[in-house]
Length: 247
Image (cartoon, rainbow, N blue to C red):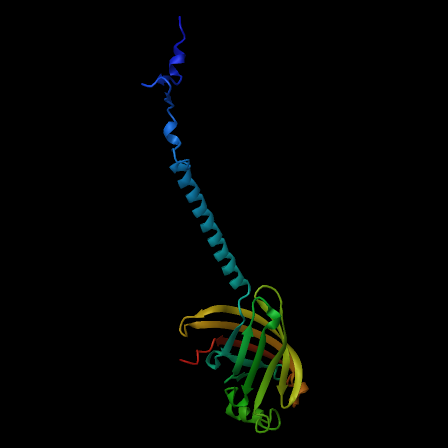
């Protein structure tokens, strides 16, 4: 019995001219006579190159965006006096703990999340904004027995160092000046929120801070220690990026 597998092999078929032959290969059309690569190979290479270019572009965009985030410029906010209050609290002979509010606060806060040490605070507190809800006491506090507001109408604070103190916490050291006397104080500060203020439609920052100081260090020691020398300051502030000059 003859193996007919030979029938599956390419045949050499003689042409009309005995000196020329034609070979019938099934894959002959995959190789154009021009010598160029097949169309499928060309499309594959074009697609691969396009994907590679897109990958490089996307990678460049991602790196660019990351660099913007990593090196974001520090933000400077103007303190909003309508949402800022400095509250002083002390002991009155041990029987009560009166408070006095210091409003009309003005100033700027610069916060750099990437380089916290570059942040800074500068604040002015006019004694015209002092309010204990007791008019006679307010007048006494403004007199030369205490603040001598006629001669020293404002209290100032200017930061000298800002350090991170855990997640959402800062230690703000600065010079506090009252009645022309300057002392270094440290504000234990919490970052309440950073983000868009929905009413102002501008970036805003909110902070809370506390510190304890001796009023006698600033020439305010009358009646101490019966009225406590130590005074606790509690601060809450909201500050907003100023409007552009064109607005």
